[in-house]
Image (tube, rainbow, N blue to C red; front, side, top):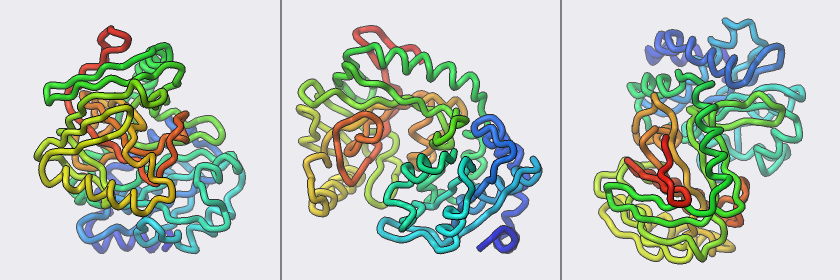
Length: 357
């Protein structure tokens, strides 16, 4: 499905006006985050599901924005993909035919799908072609009426966010230990000696760079496992095999030597347990499934908790720990999962000093 067919699809579901009215916000991403000028711009989206077509709405908003900016833009759409699916041929062909140094914009109900002969890793493909990209995956459970909340989380002061994220990254980079507490009951210690934090702040202007939109977090892997311990209480959003869920009954994770040894709570805790059991049964090397792989803190002033990790982990006034893989940002854990668990109102002590956000 290409540009004209996508516009007709949105017209069919009375969504085209929403895409048009929000396109100005998406111009900011193209100009401020990607510094798009004369490059080819490939926008990839999917059709979504009934009353859950935010991926298509985003893709169309980007397309209208790029067209209004006079950019060399192409929009391709596919069916929603789950783990194990291949991307549609029109998507793979469009990626293959892109000139080096182009821009890719992903808007996905779940995931892109395998890009086959182009490589097992999307990020390695990006690096090999010197492309730049932004990505908004796993938004397929959000209903259409949440689009305005998503758009608002993108409509931020990126320079201010980048200054704040640089400050926090430097503090984390220079630190040895984090002690994280919350009113919900979190009381957790994590050694971060000699580790480097990662900024997700919307600065994707360099070749081979890219990241999430909405932007707004700084995150860091732990150093080893010996001094990674305590209690984590999840009271915002929990990621699992089927996506992410707002937490009604808090989930308590007990961690010793970097590994989750107990999970208690209600229905959401049971879902997380089942996901970890599934991952351990599926993995060739299951040792990393229950390991704490990341601590991150939200910095986006416009984001609100909506039940989608890609947005919720960016909300200022939240923090998150992730279970599983972290090898791609300086960690030592290789796993088939990376599951963010988000909680509210954290206090972060960095080598004994309270972090000001």
